[in-house]
Length: 141
Image 1: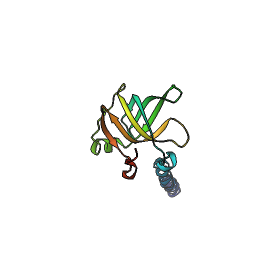
Image 2: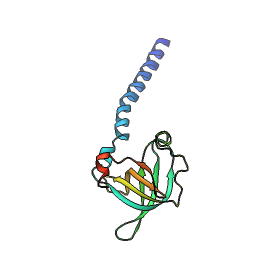
Image 3: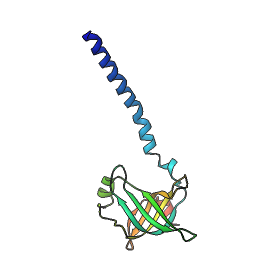
Image 4: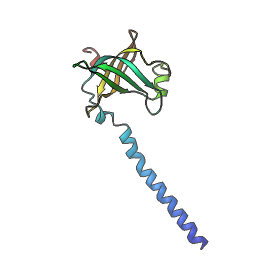
């Protein structure tokens, strides 16, 4: 009976391990699908006011209000690097942006038409604090 029980426990463990290993590539693909989530061929630049700055994994998010062409205020969200990359490579901290800060921001917009995007460039107080625009696109922007 003990042998049967050990066999069942081992089989259960193997099944769970196999299921977990099969899910990892799917989760990685879903998480790192920037080209499928955002229109990297189109860049929008707008002025806005920060409403929230989320410093957490897996990405830092900037939420801001911007006025659209019809004069309506729209809350946008921009995704950028992980907090570690923002800190180590961009020099950001949890307090780099504060609610109320006025910014000029360029994003690659979401393909689904929602007011979301992948951060390309951000200017705070006349200073560029992040510029992820590809070099070949900088001349015309």
